[in-house]
Image (cartoon, rainbow, N blue to C red; front, side):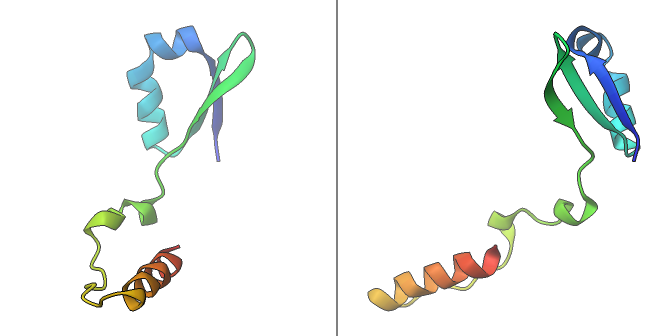
Length: 79
């Protein structure tokens, strides 16, 4: 994996070029006064699937204590 280090001023001047590099798989560390303040990495292709709020979920139609158990179980399953 290729990693670039660039200072903040250069980042502002060349943001478009930097993001093009990220799209091609490079990781960029942005520095301010020599200290790393940000890391820009390409998005993992697997994480580009549907956002979690759009994924099909269990339809919660139970009442009372069972409903809360279903919610907790669903949260644990999603992680």
